[in-house]
Image: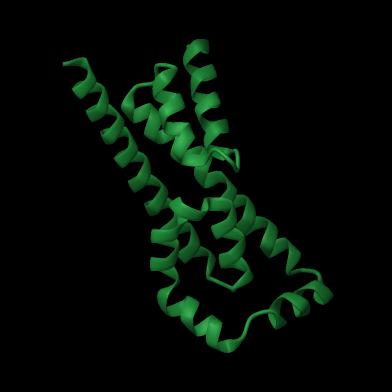
Length: 145
């Protein structure tokens, strides 16, 4: 059990780490012997944690009146309308390319609703984690023949 927890926490941490994220976490988790379901769960959980921290941190920053005014003045109404209209799809498609840290901070700076950011981020991270597991498993199967 301790061995599994050590591997799971390692997979979580690699997924959480900004430079590694999901693309390094999934192969690393499989390499240390986690099964496919555990690999997806722990790497997604690790990669999703920054979005929760960004959401919580941003909401706490908005409690400071001076900082709140400054952050609100950064975004034009046109950009706000665009993020409200297309934000889900932008987060869904670009999160794996930019990383969750960059996408989370950018989305919150553009005043994206937290539920949209968290929902699209979770779907995006999960889809790419499953796709990586399938592609890695397929590549191993091909090489084993």
